[in-house]
Amino acid sequence: MPLRSAQIVIAAAGFVWACAAILPAPSRAQAPVACNGPLTETAVIKLAASGVPEPRLVLIVKTCGSAFAMTKDSEGRLRAAGATDAVIAALREAAPKPKPHPPSPPKPELEKEGHGPGGILGDASNTPPKPPQPPPAVKAIRTAEPQPSSAPSPSAEPTDPRGQYERGQAFEMGTGVRADPVEAARWYRRAAAQGYAPAQARLGYFYEYGVSVNCDFAEALRLYRMAAEQSDPAAQAGLGHLYGAGWGVGVDTRESVRLTRLSAEAGNPRGESNLGVDFEYGTGVPQDAAEALKWLRKAADQDYAFAMNALGDLYWDGKGVPQDQDRAKGLYRQALEKMKATAELGDASAYLSLARAYELGRVVPQDAAQAFAYYRKAAERGLPVAENVVGVRYANGMGTAKDDLEAVVWYRRAADHGNSDAQANLGYMYATGTGVARDLDKAVQWARESAEHGNAQGQFNLGAAYGGGTGVPQDNVESYKWYLLAEAGGNKQATERMKNMAAHMTGAQVAEAQRRASDWSAQHPRR
Image (cartoon, rainbow, N blue to C red; front, side, top):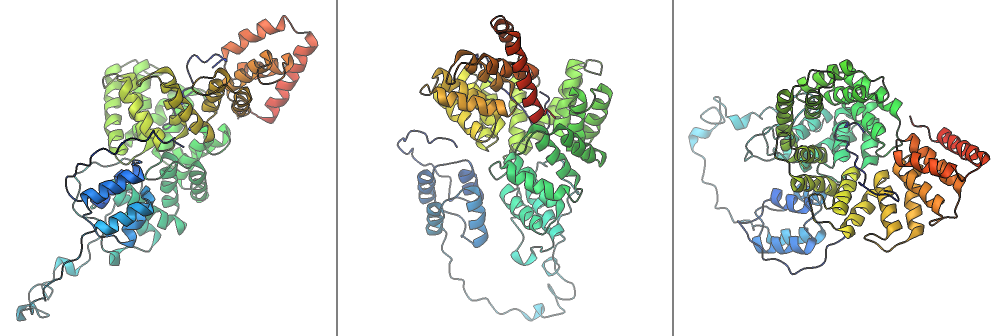
């Protein structure tokens, strides 16, 4: 499976049946709270967004106090990060009380109009500063020392959609203000509500990868579609990725490539990168190493980190280029630094890339525990593919202690979010009673859910269920049908099973299984 943007698909290893909302942890005594002073709004947003339980967060606020006054805007940002009514109430109670101000002394005559500051000579405060002018598209997250300033005064807040979008960019990149993805999303949302395509596209990305919000593919799809209808290249790239990965919509490779090519030809780095990967693996286009190299280089020249990683893979393996692992490492290092900066915003795609870096160990020490930590961060943003990966690692003890109960938690979360690999894996857990009470009805339910989504492992598992009469009536014809479909999807175990079954089936039965498989394929084309 090609890596397209941050798409990573990992099924459970070694499951032979052939082989995720987070549940609350057991209650524990509250640990003591250590304070370094009153809490800033940014600190509370980070705590709320990281999932600190309400009672714990209330205790932290009451113990440490608050360094800011609660306003309508700050309340909105806090609630967007996950702060509850109880947390808001505690912050209001802990907010600093305003101190009485002594009367202002009379102004000296020098400050009358025409003299001194504010007069003919003027003052910087007399002329509103020009708003920051970021580049027209966000290509990478800049790293800079945090600035002491926050959002400009409400009187300077833009009302036009382009100005609102640029304000969102400033908060996303930390240009002239402290980087704040929650505030960035707020401004993008305002501009998107006015139909501004670049803001709709960027907000769609936030929902796709959980930047300051939980992943929501349906909302990402809605926003991308609105912007793509206005021919926005970033939206075309994002929508193409959703169609290619089957996130929030059925897989449609033709539509994915069409949109991706439109984006790439308009010079969008994500579109260029994804089209390069399509050519590398022959996904919806003829496999073509030269075309892959061309498009990946175009995206990498725009500092697009995923393209740097993909280009690094080509040089590492010598695919379409002379093998040059030193050059590959240089590209990996550049991508790694950019991903670290992007991860500071809570971008699940960056977490996946960092996890992969520690898993491969090409430019950082190989570290399964660190890889697991980043996969878990991505999963906690609600990214289903990462939720399944976390389940796989708990099930196999990879980078963390083996824990079948936790594996089931994460498989269920990913399965409920529509991940077909997780559906197959959860069905296996129910079939074998691993980490959950054995339940053959649920085993078949999840195997069928996965199989109907075209997942080869789910189809194999459903074939095994019919072959053994496990949770369903025994039926060799139906079993053979699902094995045929699994084999077409690349499952090699299915080929062996069919060889064994054919010896116990009549020619008519095999022909009927083939007809059923053909009918299913016609109704569920692999596009």
